[in-house]
Length: 171
Image (cartoon, rainbow, N blue to C red):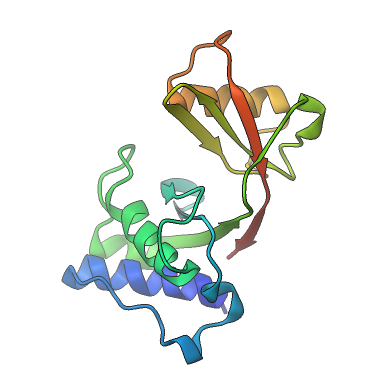
């Protein structure tokens, strides 16, 4: 059985795709502790092992994680610019994971990074790219930074600020 955070993401996606309605978060007394905290979250959707959508917030924008998950789950299903919106006939094929992020901390030396343990945020001016940790095919710090920079439209050699964070991943 899926973790309650993943169940919430699935319920939000299914209700929104079927009816266009945004669900309410569970009542406070039914929330597990992880739902009550404030944190950035990412919701990732896969279909047959391939990425189908991934949207998130690295800092919280909602009152709690439950609201953050509902918002990001719907966005992952309908607003990821890399993919068309999820169709109702795909709902049963989606594998959903939820990452709850720690507060990002500045990195002063690349030796502080480990792509299996830490996600990264790279920043140059107003451009910002994020890459979650422990992604298939991302083995080195250099790969991780290059992908995050490309996502932000930052060219190799441009000065960047780097932040790291950890995640609790729920499936």
